[in-house]
Length: 231
Image 1 (cartoon, rainbow, N blue to C red):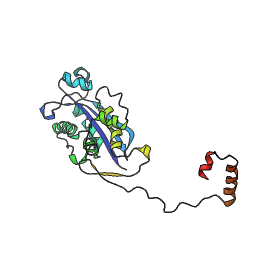
Image 2 (cartoon, helix red, strand yellow; image 1 turned 180 degrees about the vertical axis):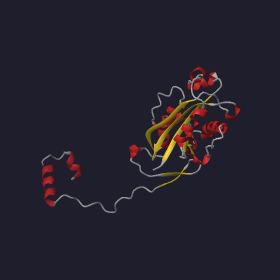
Image 3 (cartoon, rainbow, N blue to C red; image 1 turned 90 degrees about the vertical axis):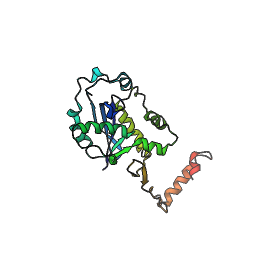
Image 4 (cartoon, rainbow, N blue to C red; image 1 turned 30 degrees about the vertical axis):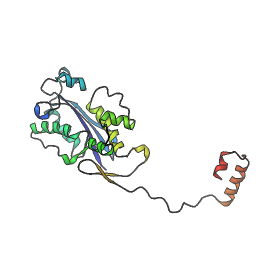
């Protein structure tokens, strides 16, 4: 069993080391590359004002966040949810930078890069011409993102989970069972060989009498009958 966590964050700005803080974390659990329905989602009081330009992106205002828990109150629950499993993140340096900044404040273990799969790196390798934003990838793969009127950590994680499966060509509907291995940067490096075909088809289970009876029945249907194509 392979457990992965698709993760996204929202923040007060772009500078983790410049005073910006987390305001939202959303996580979606995958088991063997399939969503299980188990999620982690929390809004966070950033202990500072949210600039208007940031609120315009994710819709989370200072007034909305003022009564939400501090990161220190949810850190344990967050770390218990992600455990030591791989994290799937789009533009991972950004999110990991903010998470590690908050963890560092608590003297908690930091998230190491070798456990992170960056879907932006995957997308750039697979689609070097881009664009490779989350919205662009949803459009490319026919994933409905009509509810994404603003950025949201949980919604974006749910969308990214679908994008991730598409990037690895492991969409369940295609009945593709190959397991794709990733290198440290999150790039697919190999896959199991496809299932082999039988060298000889299995013998028919129909008796000679049953075959003759079928041929006699098809003959009564006329020359233009569809069955004539398969006789």
